Length: 157
Image (cartoon, rainbow, N blue to C red; front, side, top):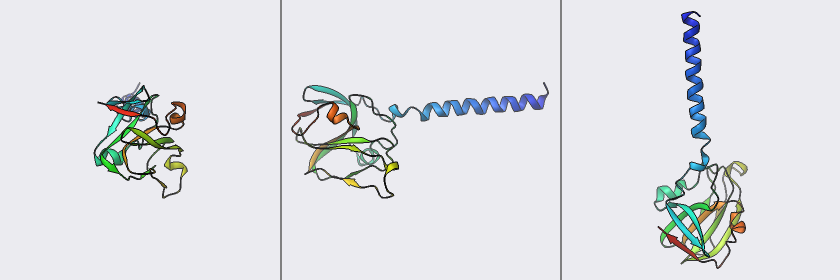
């Protein structure tokens, strides 16, 4: 084998290794957030949640995530009752949004489509009134987990 052929083969192998490593990072959508930062108890059932407490965390939300593990979600914490708007910017999976005030579910917005299936300006989703927390879970999970208006919610950190 000539030196030139060996060099081309080595370069090709190195590129292949880099591509395999990059594909591994890209395909790890379930690791998009740390879903074990805290736990929520909803009607006696515990869920692992990533916390969105700062403006930056809340703006980022679950954008880019490719999978939300079962019995997991992202919990948005508001220190004071707030009227908030959510949209599906940079979302790649559908979700349910669960609106919470003072430890009770006050509304559920189910099966919201990801941005890629929406118009350029995705719609906003709003709670029925001011909230102290918002939980995002995978599409259809609110119904599957029997989370409904009146469900009791407790954050366990």
